Amino acid sequence: MADKLHLTPVSEWGIFTEFHPMVIAGPCSAESEQQVLETAREIALAGIRVFRAGIWKPRTHPGCFEGVGTPGLKWLQRARELYGLKVCTEVAGEKHVRECIRHGIDLVWIGARTTANPFLVQELAEALQGTDLPVLVKNPINADLDLWIGALERLNRAGVQKIGVVHRGFSSLKHLPYRYTPGWRIAIELRTRYPDLPFFADPSHMAGDRKYVPELSQRALDLGLDGLMIESHCHPDQALSDAAQQLTPQALRSLLKEQLIVREADTEEADYRENIEQLRARIDILDENLLEILRSRMAVSEEIGRFKKEHNIAILQTRRWDALLDDMIRKGDAEGLNEPFLRSLFSAIHEESIRVQNDILSEKEESNN
Image (cartoon, rainbow, N blue to C red):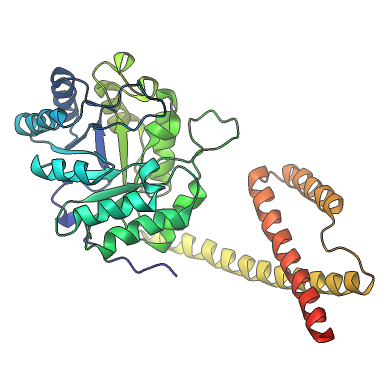
C-alpha cells in the first residue's frame, strides 16, 4: 500500500515564476565556466528562469567525462548572480547534497540510475532531512512504478515535502527511434495516483536525438504534464556528454515560443462543457459494457477450468493462446486499433483467465483433502 504523500505546492517553492509549463533548461554537463555562463546568458534571454547543469555525471564506462565536480558549483553560483537564474543539478550521494547546500543550489534532482537503488535513495533522504531543498525524482531506468513511488516515499518520510518527478523514459530491448521508450502509460498511472505531484518530462534523454525533442515535448504537454526539463548547450556539437540530444538556446527559444502548443487544463466555456459531458457519458456507458463483457468472459474461463480438470488437461495451452492473440491483433489492425495496446490488453485478460483457472484447481484439490 503506497503512502500518502505530503506535498508543498510548487507555487510555494520559490523556484518557478510561470507554472504552465514550468521549464528547466541548460547543458547536460557543466564543462567550463565560460560554457556555463555563455549558455546561462542565452537561457535567460530566452525567458527561462531555472538553469540546470550536471556537476557529477554517472557514466557507464570509466574514462568518460564524469563531470567537473564541486568546482562547477561556483560556476552555477556565478550564473545565478549574473542572470538572476535559479540553479539546479543532479545528486547521487550524501556528499553531493552537502556540497549543494554549502553552495546554495536552489533545487536538485535524483537521476534514473540512483532512483533504481533504494540504498542510495535512503542515503539522499537522510542527507536532505531538515533542509528545505526542493527535489525532483527521475523515473528508475527500468519501467518499475513501485520503485519510483518508493523513492518518493523515502524522501517524504524524511520530511522532504518539496518533491516533484521527471519522466525521462525507460530502457528497452525494442528497436525504437528514441534513446529510451517513452512509457507514457506508467507516467499516466503515477499522475493519476498523485495528481498534485509536480510532473516534468525530460524529452532530451527520452529522445537521444534533438530532432525528436519537439514531438516528445508536445506529447508531454498534451498529456497535461506540468513542465519540461530540456538540455541546451551554447555549442551542442562540442558537448562532452550527450551532444546529439542538446539544443542550442536559440532552438530552445523557438521550440518554446513558436512550436509548442500549450493545452489548458480545463475551461468553463459552455459549448465545451456541454459536449465534453455528453462524450464522457457515452464513455461511461461503454466502460460499464466492458465490465459486463469481462465478467462474462471470466465466467466462461471458470467453466473451462472446471472442464479441463475433469478431463485432466493442463491449464496453459500455448498454441491456442498464440493463435488467439495473432487473430485479435489482425482483426484489431483492420479496425485501426494499436497493436501494442491490443497485445497488452489481451495479455492482461489471458493472465487473469489463467489465475481464475488456477483457483479452480486449488478449489478442487482442497475439496479432496
